[in-house]
Figure 1 (cartoon, helix red, strand yellow):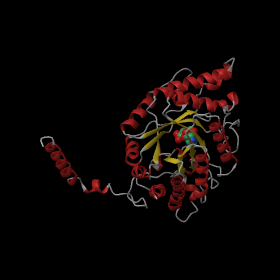
Figure 2 (spheres, helix red, strand yellow; figure 1 turned 120 degrees about the vertical axis):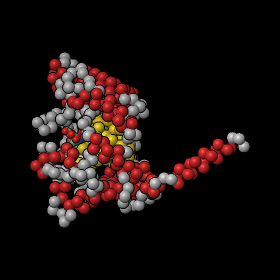
Figure 3 (cartoon, helix red, strand yellow; figure 1 turned 90 degrees about the vertical axis):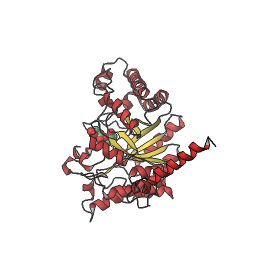
Figure 4 (cartoon, protein in one colour; figure 1 turned 45 degrees about the horizontal axis):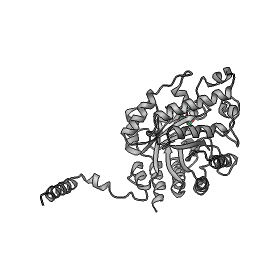
Length: 381
Ligand code: 9MR
């Protein structure tokens, strides 16, 4: 008896405090309607098991942070982990921004995707080319640098980063094969031309050693490619080769910037083809995430209701993710329209505001927000 009384008292106290909960808090316990109406994407994530994320910039303001915690359950570092950001000069590694970001994501219980360990285009280490040119043995030197960066950075955040984008965009921008195009827009893929495809397997193996529990992804851009075209086939073939060679790759990220034209894979009605593509990757034994979704509004300017048309594109992608078993996450590339990278990017700045995201400039949910919720909620059926 003497033991039971405190338990009874505790139960009574709990019942009283539950009764005193505000209406909104108890309403929260109701499942989301399948329309997604009134539900945050974080709630949708909890109900479907699909992570819903957003990019976080290096200098995220209090407003951006509040938007993130109110709406999402996962974040991807937009720039912080890139080699160019962490190492301005040879031999130097600056962890200030990444330490801060890792700590913040952990404090807010947001799943963190570290993007990216190796990317040759635009945000590679600014000193790498000269370093290799000066080396008597460039391939050995590059292998050493890859090993050093991986051990140092992945090792530092062991157990704290859920997902690593180990390799970003190895394939040619618009076609099949590797990116070895040499122009000011797409400099040579220095990793590939120095080491061949082996750099990919090496980086995955080293990352796995540095953090055996982190999920390791290869992230690729399919922005101007239709599912079933040479580039998407090249990605499937690459993943198949890696799996066959027992490379520790856990997943593939499909960047989904619908930005250059209506030949993007997400137009005009892509749910079945995108689902089939995710299924095909899944059959190879990898998870798939939509990693960088945004949909430029000017592409839809000729539609009777561009915002509704934009929502429909988002819906098609979210539905495909929900319907394909291998799809474990969907990430949009930013929060408010006013912060999108597209407004300062050379190919898209002329049409600013591109308004490609889920929250408008004032932070209000756009039609696209609920469309993503509704699409993902198809997973519950
Ligand atoms: O959003 C990123 C932007 O802030 C950078 O200036 C830009 C540099 O290329 O990279 C953007 O993010 C890219 C991502 O890292 C990889 N996929 C394509 C994204 C858009 O270029």
